[in-house]
Amino acid sequence: MGFGGTSRGSVKNDINVTPLVDVVLVLLIIFMVITPMLQRGKDVRLPQATGSDDKDKADPIVVSITADKKLWIETTEHDEKSIADQLRTTLQQTPGRKVLLKGDKALTFGDVRRVMDGMKAAGIKGVGLGVEEKKGK
Image (cartoon, rainbow, N blue to C red; front, side, top):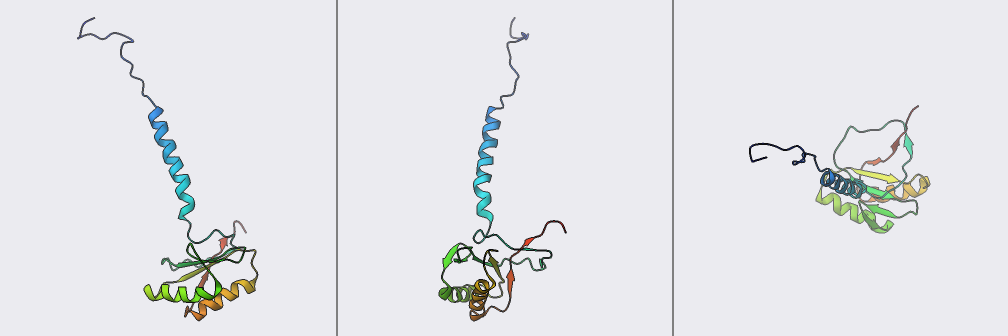
């Protein structure tokens, strides 16, 4: 046939899904890599509690105590002696900011209390404790 007519089977109108699958897989990989980085502080197993006090949604300073008793402010490791100085410096830069303490559930009360004493020495009046919400009743 000529230019004006169409011939069956000469034009293929199928959609090629291979580029779409490639793009979706790349996006999936990006999200899998980025998602663990969204958590603030260090990874600790938090104790469970029934209620939470989420009234104040301001961006807190996250202090974490891992199961091996290492102290972290956000993602920077500190020792027990320097944590009060570092918190004092951070609070001078952004006054009025809240502090959230995340302690691994394998720690004893004494381990957490020592860090809270260091926070008190830094002039922090109140500390929020990070907990995991209990599922069910």
